[in-house]
Image (cartoon, rainbow, N blue to C red; front, side):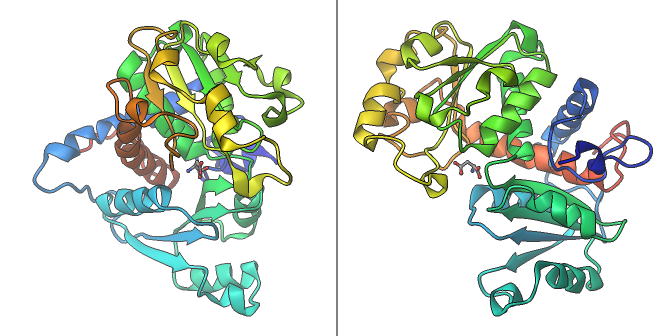
Length: 324
Ligand code: ASP
């Protein structure tokens, strides 16, 4: 998949499909723009007119609660009109091709498609076929990429730990093999120059080429989380497993679940993250999910600011302008 398809002729973002090929300056500028939206939360009118008159279509072929909702909230805060396209009841289930559906929506003057699809590469495919003025944002494609999730995770990390990523040790724990979140995070954190990035999973849930991705793999969670500043837990992607890769969930929790006891091995001020939806008692103990180290709900709030920044920038907003 060609990453350069997402840039316009001036090197600015036109689509947002993957973090591969982007620079630290580009990622930091998205994070700075997202931060510039924080003061909105304290205002009586929590909106800016940056995308007034624009139409954004949420095109979700796969279920989602928080991603779709936070995209919708973000678009509304930018004053855009939002259409949620319900694909379960749409013409695609009556045999219309994806491209015919897209052309129909374009004729309704859509300016942006936010796409979630179970096939890797779907957002790139759509980006190659839309009219030149339409931007496409990848809201998760198969096991390939989930770049807005990675950006909001990095914003959450920066918020709690500061911008010097080179000082941080970060562990991603769980189903790395099927996780688009892990793949995008690995690219993004390496671009931002993270000090040390570890992935922790049984061999059955690690990609074969894991060492080439710039991470340190661990099979034992106790070793993987030793002295880390940030722990990112992942959901077991059972819907993407083609055959049984684990004995059972109880055994998985016994070997990999994040408990209070295990958490003491990390740095005392470690933060615990999870992209959601969380499975209590499978990936992490409830006490940890709701405990003082957890920033899981913070991630959701940062998701709104991050998605605002990405939608505004792909539709031409230049971040040096003052918001407010
Ligand atoms: N919400 C994330 C995703 O869409 C993580 C997950 O589903 O486990 O990939």
